[in-house]
Length: 208
View 1 (cartoon, rainbow, N blue to C red):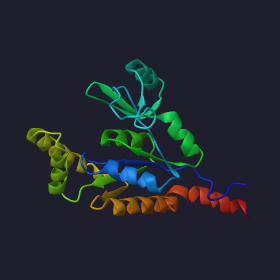
View 2: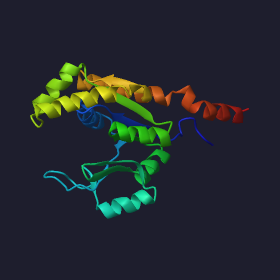
View 3: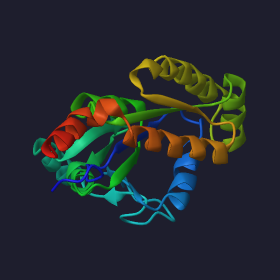
């Protein structure tokens, strides 16, 4: 007989402006929380030095990607600078159906696609402490010109306006604290009446 804890895994989506630190949070979270599976994105771009197939990305050709896209093989996808990036549907759904929580670290455009297809997805928005701090982090990278930095900050403000589409937010002032917030969000979702009310009512009615 069904047990109240026998439920599908959560689909967790982490996104936010470039420079907010979502990648760092994601990496630290995965080192600590081994019962959550990180989804590996698929891309058509060339593999860079140090990247590992199946760990950094799944690297495929443009033709393979487009074929999979036509066959509804991706939960979300984007086309950036001539390359495709996407989240493979089969692996994510297989894990969720086994009761395993799956984490996606993706762009806001992809997060909105996920929300449309999976209203139950838990969308978490990573914020920088301030716009000034975000600018410092981008400058520290040393990879962008002044004009590119201005563009990134303008884009960040535009993206922050989409925060109403998300379930939760985390201010990334301290990575350890941010990871702790993520753990709390998952615990809260696993005790969500809105998410499990029908299942709980049916379960207890069966015991009569």
